[in-house]
Length: 639
Image (cartoon, rainbow, N blue to C red; front, side):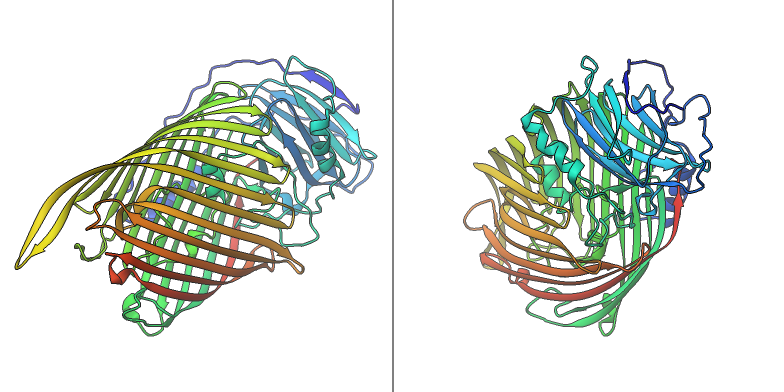
């Protein structure tokens, strides 16, 4: 064990051959077989997903004179294309050992006679780019804490003590450069921000993955490269430094009640009722050196007080699987499915680990009358990191909206399907700026008689305007070809006339995100060709949405959101339809303990049709809901 305050090592790349295991999975046919899901989770929880992070020889654990263990209080980091800093906060000075493991490249610190703060257990810090891919930690029974930095390439590094030996600073640079990182004016503020910020007394590891609700607890700072528009839009607002739980299996129970003043989502027949909801929840995140898996499954029983014919079992499934074939190549498969009735299902935005968002391309700004529906979305990405600054992503995606128990006709809802293929090339101009070019092909089907082919070319730009402010925009032309059947009534007869139309449309959109330790804000706007969510065929969709999350005293969080959308169908003037909608929401959340949390929400929707729109698409909807979540079992799945 070395007791030096500074160590400088240049890690050389070492290659070795490893055998890859063949991963087999059976595709879902219909519904969600709970037994198969449980068996799959238990199997993945027991099988190791990659190479161990343990070195080949045992670690020497020194005997310290004090019986009191030092605590790891927090990890804060900045990772950019040409440098990275990592600060480890400790409760007291500690002896440490630095080591390196190749294939894949990893740097680790073993801290003697230490333990991780209980609220840091199972967490990691993830970066989109730069020298560091992620930071994770774990402890063994011998009171040695290992902090692992998963690297994207070979690096030179320097480790030093700060602040009376209660902070460790890790500086990383490309292998051709050694010594401390020069403090240039452009990056001086970023370093001073993480060194001068309050030391994290604790960071929440609640199953929902949200940050701790303690208003006095600062957050881990991250200044990784700016996300693209599409990543930022799907991520939603979150506090600065929010970390993800890892290598954890969670079993829980959700229950609650809500009052809905229009349960059929139809202004022509307004009925209000109270429902009761309860159901188990299973969440898993497993991390290995090559494989990572996140999975969530939630069946929920919904029982109405008066309108018993609406009683149902809603089910939610989501997964995210990543395989890193090499330091440059990776593959990712994502999927989500919702089998439910109506809108504002709590399982759509609760209970998932951070980052386990739906890959759906279905239009979320149109609302339909109550109908039993299956929403299934999947996406596969193959990404190649050509250099530190350049990456190429080839993807295939499919989304389907199936009204399984609905009688479909021209005056009712229609099944909708959207298939996509695309190629995205991104180049990092600087540590804070990224540009990209994307080609996207879309095939949108609405019922049996409408099909739209869309080809798009987008230019994207993303920038970290400041350490807490990110701007992402995109724009480009779209060419659409609509083939549909126009139905004209003539007396007692009906004429079906095939119609083909083509046209050009300019797509544009942007996301502005502000992330602070106690406040998160996001503003999103877009204008593009999309699907009509079962209510219309292909549409030109224009929408804007703002959301704010604020931490209050007493472990409370408040959430506010508002949005507007205009969806106008493509096609001839005789068949053109349009809907405008307003949405608003407010909520309060509180974590009573690490296992028990509470939420109170209000949601409002107002939607009106224009031109030839169907009347049953008009709706006014208010719903008040209260939810309790309790995680009764958490199983650690290894380091």
